[in-house]
Length: 321
Image (cartoon, rainbow, N blue to C red; front, top):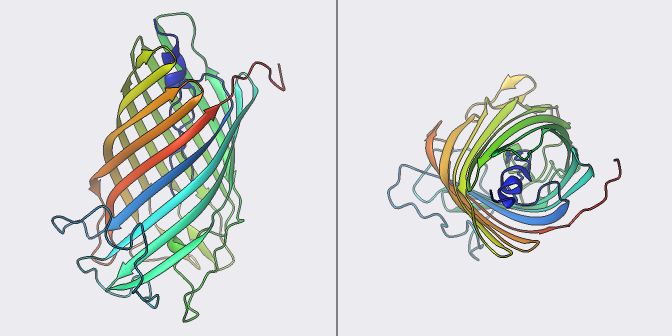
């Protein structure tokens, strides 16, 4: 039995929701506190166009000659139209007890949209999230290792939700760094491992409050599944993974009225790899869409990619014994 697979399967809490800005990946450090920085890139484009690039001009690096006058969602999509969301997150995890973890996330978002050759661009800090996880099942000395985690959290409305374009019109809520609402969320994760192989499934839900513009996102649900194999040599651990990711949200409501073309229904699949060199971790993953809700006025999901670095603390003592 390889002891590190226990942590590979069970050390992290998956809280996969890009709207709320939360995602914790698998880690080979069981009950270990740590810090990390993660960069997430999501592209939404006209997915029925063959050969659509994952990094169209302006999606990642800004071109110099584009205006910022376009109003979101005012016309049908054309080839080359896209929306891209780049997020850099600072994350912390601290075990106050062997079964209780406290997590914190602070995101900084960089959003780009090109419609009809005109660009919108927004940068700003998003809403921070604090969550608490309780480890109901922990690995034992048996050949089959299991972990069950349940938890809850809150997203605080500290990010900007009132940014405007150069013509004074407010950006669409989906483009804002923050939502302006206090949201509550809950999640559950189950993991199992036998020797070098393992898997993990997660489900989470979020209920959003109403912001000062009388906007409210409907309850949203996300799920993930990871299947991986463990390679280890000395202090180096490598975990290739097969991944699935899904999310559903009915849409956005304004003054109680559902807004058109605001629905999100998506299933993605892909691969990833985590590598650990002692206490340092490197994380890579990418997913492509399998099925999704589509509209001729809103771009569809084309790519979801994540890269991250983590530093894990060899924690020996806990605030609560």
